[in-house]
Length: 121
Image (cartoon, rainbow, N blue to C red; front, side):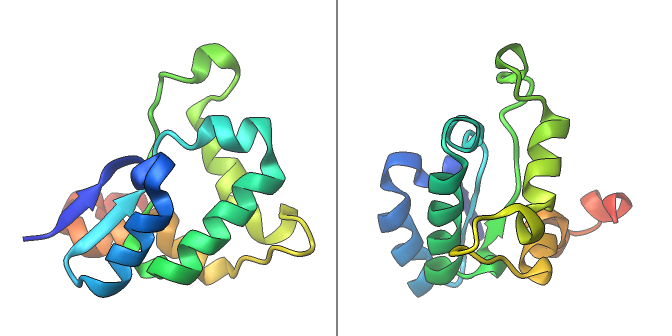
């Protein structure tokens, strides 16, 4: 059985990241992290970089809480574009590989969920 933890554990994301690093059937999504990115992009980048470093990009799946945040100016399109542009837009002390971003945006979901998401590529 594969388990996908919602919201990357949010307040407990570090503990979840370490659990993921030890379990082969545990992944997480990053839904609900839009307010962190919107309020403090630098902090968001540090958190996501650490999450990737600990849990591995292959264990993280992009997701939204949409349309919940659209009312606050954080559309799903904004969220996708923000994440997609991390390699170019992140602060100089926080680097993201385009391959990791692609894996998180859609390739991990394709791998885990199968053909249900094949049309996204």
